[in-house]
Image (cartoon, rainbow, N blue to C red; front, side, top):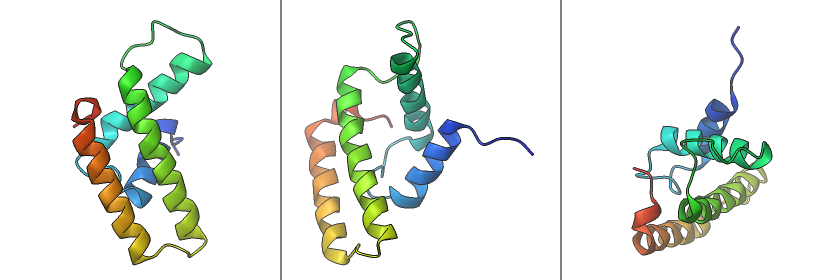
Length: 104
């Protein structure tokens, strides 16, 4: 059996828990760039290609923090309709405010 790589794992988590947060984003490309950015930083490889740029790092860090909250609250069975509505509004505002950082 083949091993699941980090990109596939991140993409799976986003698809399971991040349907609102990453709606309209190219999840496959975002996942690949997250992994490449991680490799660029942790392996100190400034020449690493296809990574998030500075603005995208901040933008997608906000989305990943929201994703983390959703995962924890769902797993603790504390997620509810009010939280989902607030998340929807927050993501719409973020996407509208920083469209230049989105990966579509």
